[in-house]
Image (cartoon, rainbow, N blue to C red; front, side, top):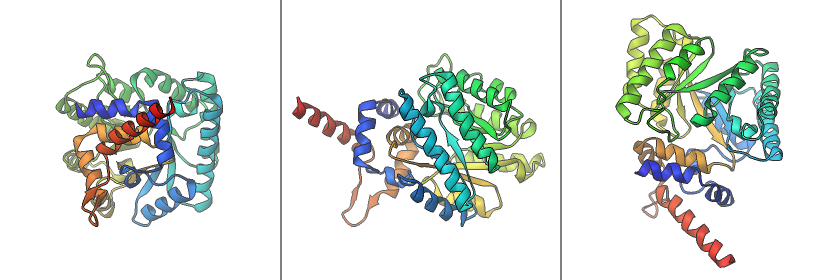
Length: 327
C-alpha cells in the first residue's frame, strides 16, 4: 500500500511542479546531489576521490513541450562539457521522455543523437534509462537507431518484466545496467512478488556476466551483491567485466567498502530542480529506502525527522490549501 501511495505521488504533475518551488526539502537533499552543475561536479569530485565513478542524471521526465525538451538537451550537453573540462570520472544517464519521446520519436532521436555525438568526442558513455512499460520498445528502438552510428551508448533492463531475459539476450553486445525495476506495472507483464523479481534479477546478472559485454549491477541488496562476488570467483570473471552501482546517498558505507575491495563501483548521481518524481520512486521501490533516508535526515538538535513520507503528504496538503485560497 505504501508503495502505491509513493508511486501515485511520483506521477502527480501538480505536486511535481510545486515541489520545484520548495527546493530540495523533505529529505531529498540527502539523495539528490544539488540543483546545478557546479554542485554536481563538486559531488562527483568527492566520490572520485574515494575511488568511485559516477553516472549523472539531470533530473526530469515526462516532458510534453518541445521547448522544455530542448532545454533539457542543452543542459545535458552542458553537463558533458563540465565533466570534460573538470576531467572527472563520470558519464551520463538520461531519460528519453525528458528529451521528447512523448512529443515525437524523430525529435527525441535527434536530441539524443546530438548528446551521444558530443559525448563520443570525449570518449564518454551515454546510458539510456528505461522508464515505464509503454516506453520500453520505443526506447529499444532509440538504442537500435543510435547504435548504427555510435558505440558509446547502452541501456537498462528491468528484472521485474516477464520477458527481461529476452531483452538481455537481445542486447548482449551492449553495455547494460541491470535493475529490479521502479515503476508500477501490471501482473500481466511484470512480476509482483519480491522473491520472483529477485530470482529473475539474479538470472539476468549471471547470464549477462557469462555472455554479455560490460555489466552494471545496480542494487543495494547486499545478499545479491554477495552472490555476485561468489559467482564471479567461481567463473573467473575479471573485475573489468562488471561494476556495482548504487544511488547517491544510499548505503554509503557499503559503496565505500566495495570500492576499497577493488571492485569497479559507480554511483548514480541525480541533480536538478525536477527531483520530486525521482525521490518518490526511490521511496516506493523498497520500504528499506524510507528507513535509509530517514536515518540520514534525522536532526539530532531538535530530535525530529525532516519529513520524508510526511513531507510528501504535507506538500500535497499545503498546495491544495493554496489552491483553495486562490479560488
